[in-house]
Structure formats: structure tokens, C-alpha cells
Image 1: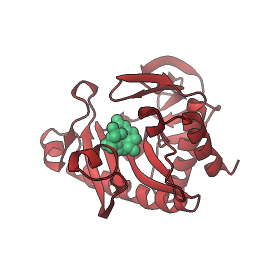
Image 2: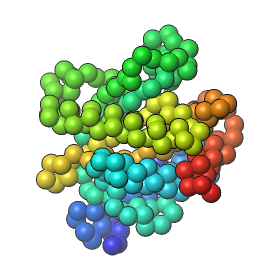
Image 3: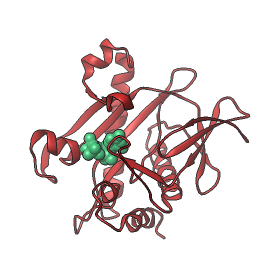
Image 4: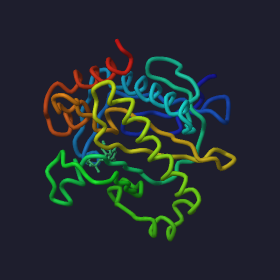
Length: 236
Ligand code: UDP
């Protein structure tokens, strides 16, 4: 499999077409952005770590019944994935109040909630990814009702599998963002990445943040946190 042309360059990854029309190659970058691109920087080693962490978790999810776009890790930063058309939603799952939810509802970060919370945002950088509900999603035809049901089921399953897995590694899964795509035949699969860029990971014992909040909030030891997640996952 060979890269042909660059299809898309985003904030954290480049995506290439290949000589196989059904496959793309994702190339993870060290670049980091936050606050809808307002804050920019680099996190040394992030590309490799996010590639390896994502693939490790995607494989775990596949084994547990969640279909994903993952095909094969090609190099430390590059992975072959199935070509999908992305459903234009960010699917956010929250176990503990943090970030924008804590702010919006006036809760202290770390507040436990009675139930897992599922949120959807319409993927549009210019609009700042506004939050939408089921009515908006169906009215605007971002996906079908059937797709939305499946996406919601998969998102909650991902939460169950990852929360249990990470708990054993001393990591509390606070919240995370998922994206889904459609294969050529319409099958919904989990796509994009699952990494310290897209999840909040807190050390179970100390509450220390081991994710992109260290970059967003200038907490220092950003690279150490990313490495610590990789180390716990890979047992390295
Ligand atoms: N998230 C993400 N990309 C986004 C927005 C959020 O990966 O564009 C992740 C974020 O890392 C966190 C979860 O989704 O794990 C919930 O984020 P929140 O809505 O609290 O927004 P934030 O505080 O990150 O701006």
C-alpha cells in the first residue's frame, strides 16, 4: 500500500489516499491546538503516542464488538484505515463532570454524576462545534434515526469497555470524544482517534491529569503525561 495524494490536513493528522480506493493512511503530527485553534504548540512525541494508543484501544474495541476503521499500523506514526465518510458529529461521553460541562452547569470539576451523559456537537470549526440534540440531528439530517441509535449504543459500549480496561491500569476515564463514519455500504464504524488528545484521563490514585488539559491549561509535564499513558497501556 502506498500513499498517493494528501486528502486532508487537520490540526493533529494528515490523511492520504492510497493506491487502494477503500483505504486511507493517517499520519499523526506532534502539533497541538486548543480552544478551536486559538492556542497552538507542539508536544514532542505526541504523534507516535497517539497513533499507538489509538490503535491499541481500537483493537480492544473490535475484540469487544465495536466495529472500527482500523486496518493496520504501518509505522510509529502511520496507520492504514478504512475510508469512511465522517458523520458530522462529535459524540461526547462523560462519566465525571469536567471541562465545558462543569463550566456550563456550574459544577466543580470532578463532580460525580448519577448517570453517564451523552452529548453531540455538530462538527463545524467556523461555528465552534455547537452542541446539538437528537431533534437538531434529525432535522438537519446529520445522520438517520437508525444511525443515531447505533452510534449512541456504540458510544456507551466504548465507555464500558474502556472504563473497565483503564481502571485496571489505574486510570479513570473522565470523558472523551468519538467520531463515527460510514463505509461505502453504509455500515457505521468508529473512526478518528482515541488518545490523550480526545479523552480526559486522571490517575486513579492521585487525580493527576494525564491528558491534553496539561497543554490547554499550561500545567507543565505535558510530554510526561502522554508517555505515562502509553507506558501504562503497553506495559513499557
Ligand atoms: N474533545 C475533543 N475535541 C473537541 C472537543 C472536546 O476531543 O473538539 C474531548 C475533550 O478532550 C474531552 C471531551 O471531549 O475529553 C469533552 O470536552 P469538553 O466538552 O469538556 O470540552 P473542552 O473542555 O475540552 O473544551
